[in-house]
Length: 306
Ligand code: UDP
Ligand code: MG
Image (cartoon, rainbow, N blue to C red; front, top):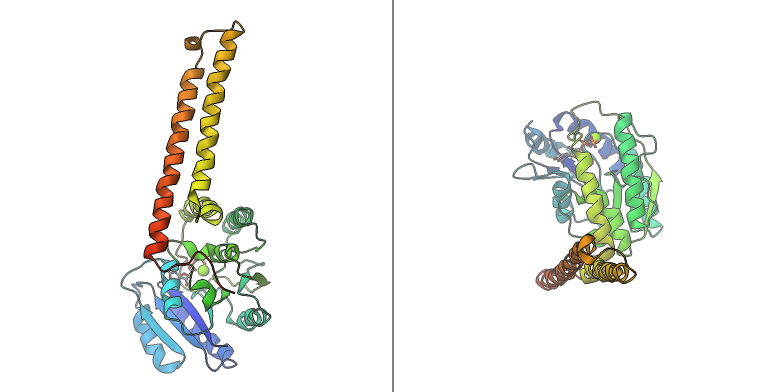
């Protein structure tokens, strides 16, 4: 098994050397492996430091992105460049512990496609860990899967499984959920988590909203990505039926001697339901057209092979 460790790096200069030293001692047991360091537009000289370190560490390959694209893009660049059968991203701030790598690989050898790290004893501020627990619960509900720590970067993936997923946006947090819905066998093990001792966290409170919106998208994409008409159509038809029921209700009220049609808000409500319903159905048609273009113009397949 060839292993490609992927390090997304944004202003982590001080962490690079100690991290690579830790990796070196772990990777001694995996002679054929590589570490792909992806500099995500750092401004603290991380890329120069990496190029220098590449002289010292033979397993190190360095990719320098043109600007700061974000952690997902950095991981995607690393996965694209990876040559190993297993890709294994870890944070470059030393919060993940390379000593856990062999344990992740053991699970891969047992036949799992993805082994997720679980920072059971998380070393971050209480509020962050708390919000992250809520987010994880939402993702579990959306995906029907039972992984604890989607946000943990440290996960081992069979490359064949992630190759077809098309990473973009902030999606690295949801890879395990997307892959599982596509049939990947996913499991988890508890990994160490250490407090950050050098450099600063790259995320602030703004992440809360972005993750929430992403979870909303995830719910849609997991269930209905390849059949949007069924999703929008169901909402649309329900709304139209509701509209028809409302107007019938208004007429019945009138017939049994209640207020006339113009004395109740029901006709307006009915029109609203019906218009929204038709819009939803048309939205489904549009989304179907987008899907067809998508699958025809990209080489993505709507299935994965075992
Ligand atoms: N990172 C990155 N690009 C970014 C932000 C972060 O490559 O735009 C990297 C960062 O260098 C680190 C990892 O992603 O290796 C996780 O970031 P951080 O430790 O700041 O996140 P936290 O642990 O605070 O959630
Ligand atoms: Mg960190």
